[in-house]
Amino acid sequence: MIVIVSATQTFFACPNTYTGKTADGRTVLARYRWGHLSIRVQPAGVDDGADGAEGDSILEIDHGERFDGMLDYEDLRTLSHGLIQWPETYG
Image (tube, rainbow, N blue to C red; front, top):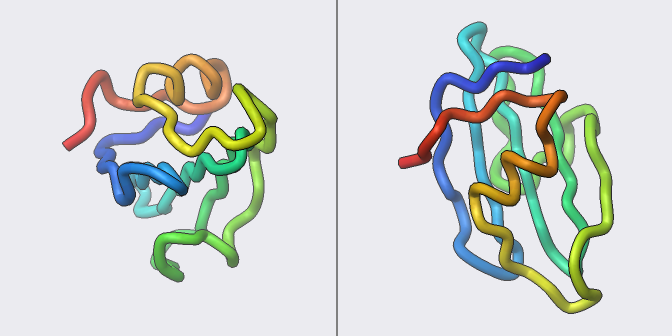
């Protein structure tokens, strides 16, 4: 289980993106667009921007409708439950 100690919402919509940091300095990037949720983890000390292209994919799922681009934080927490422990709130 990956434990996130701090999280922010990087983009509000289309794509909806959340960024989290682990205690050991890894960045976790969650991106939701076109009804698809992608979560990637960067190695410690690597931050390649908001798209997370260099990170290792740990979750790829379709959720919602084809043109959806907004995912609220509670849905993110629910969809990644058991894999990632996000903080109660982001900010």
